[in-house]
Length: 146
Image: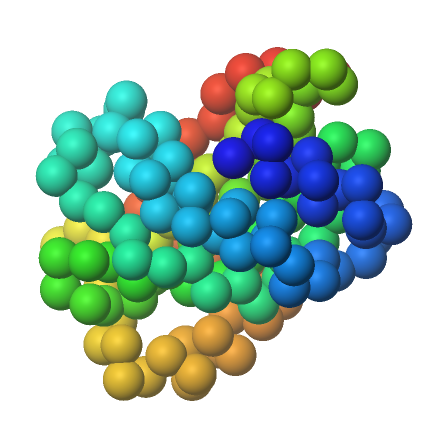
């Protein structure tokens, strides 16, 4: 994942959105495995859940070695969608993530709200500019931002 992000960052100015290149596609696919693995460290229910795709509303370079992605992820188990926010920083030399903030799902009365996939477009635009207003069901931060 860090290798794909490094290639993408080299092609993108700070503040600019990512272009849909091969590195971009590889990065998106890697999140399907990486996010549940990270969440599974703190939340046991994520050890048996998986993502099918992250569809970003925002995908941009936010710093020298940093990226922000915000949009919706499909859950494999029931093909519902949940909001997803990632901010990460890679190591200056090694292909690894130094720091990550991951937020996923809106908190509901019985846990994480799972919205039907057929309302995908409506859900995506409902989120625009709201990442700081969502009551996130899951929130993980690891590493040290440098």
